[in-house]
Image (tube, rainbow, N blue to C red):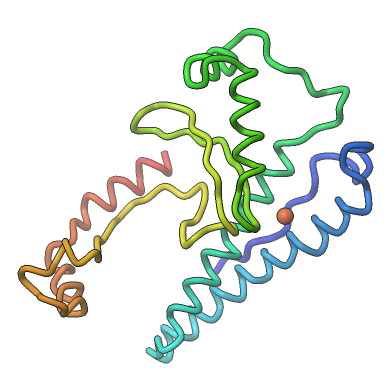
Length: 201
Ligand SMILES: [Fe+2]
């Protein structure tokens, strides 16, 4: 199984001075981000052990750890790529990004204002992120609490099972386990395969 690894920073630790100091960057990258990478690998190993023993008594904790550390890793990797030295930072004045931001936020100024306000107003620990939403083909700004709230940021959904009661209550009443067991009979594996190969192309 492939292990996740800590990516190198795309610049020196002092490259973001004076706006982000070298000591902060060293700790943030070398300790905090590294801990998420290690936590992600540890969660995957524990899930592998659980499958080997067919013991899923800790499944909620393991899935929580997977989403938390996995999203922590993905978002930090993006965070490092979201920054550069001040002398290389130039606001777009034209081009595809400029036009997309103008289309979806009105102006670059409005985009920056909303992004800043979203970041300020995140409840507790979290992130503000700009995302591309492929169905609407648009840019959106999101707040993220912690790293995940059980979603893995940056992932492309390939298969979904709705376990809201509205998905099964009439037929299964409160027996969600039976619903899930039966759902595998109607799982579209070939559709799943097509979606997966489309991503690999
Ligand atoms: Fe962080």
